[in-house]
Image (cartoon, rainbow, N blue to C red):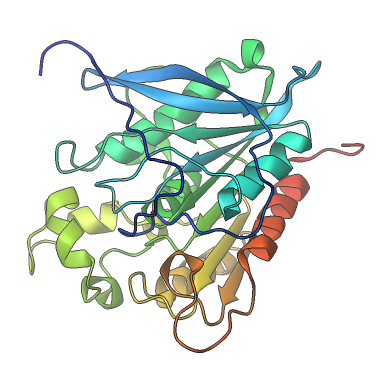
Amino acid sequence: MSGRKRWWRVLVPGASVLALGVVLTSCGGSPSLAGTPSTVTYCTNGGVDLAVQIYHPTDVPKNPVPVVVYFHGGGWQQGVPFIEAGTQFGDVETSIVNHGWYFATVQYRLAPEWPWPAQIVDAKCAIRYLRASAGFLHIDPSRIGVIGDSAGGQLAAMIGLAPPLAGFDVGQYADQSSRVEAVVDEYGPTDLAAPGWLSSPIAAQTDEAVFGVAPGGDTAPLVAASPVTYVAPGAPPFLVIQGAADPIVPPSQSVELVRRLTAAQDQARLVLVQGAGHGLVPAGSEAMSLDLAAVGSDVASFFFTQLGQPGQ
């Protein structure tokens, strides 16, 4: 591929896409997003100019503030870096920005045109860009949190756990760390070599197209793309949210991630939403034990606790 390609897809507000986690579901939140968006190129990978959209308070903070960075779902093959008012992630944005902090959404390259590890390479480059640009963005480089849903949850968990030696920290801003200080993983696949994932209806659609693994093939690439592979003492705090009736990403994926984190004496909490399917949408006749507004409030509180400082 020659030259650079600017790549920014638009999702019509109100649309709903379900493909391993691109779900825009109303939770009765605020009618508009709180932040003023600014879009900038954060990295150029494979000739593609990649954008991050930063939502910031109207008044630029006088002192550096934390930033929460969102990675969308979509099976690593589709989806857009888009949030909508009145959805869970729109409500999280509103809470974060009204707190005087920044919220950012990240575009990353998609398979099959760009197979794994392009997605995590881009995601880590975005964190390094934000840290390198912290001065003029008024971001505190020591207080960066990430959140993602489904495939984006896997990316958020990989950012939090995969060390530089894993080989994903390549490209621009190599002098910066991609470490983050807090992670929210919402129903993301965490052990791609586990029988529960391999038998999932989505695995057959993603393992070969995204990770280059044919059915029954060598699972080593799946192990290398699994957040559980990199669990070790010293991980950032994790909040893991999972629908108990999820037919796409087995709940055992989230349970196993939290089990390994706690076994390593890392801070991790699992919120298992009863009656919820993939995307935390109602599944069957059982009422959801938490609505999306409550989930969004829990997520915002987690970030305020983990990234805040006394007096904020």
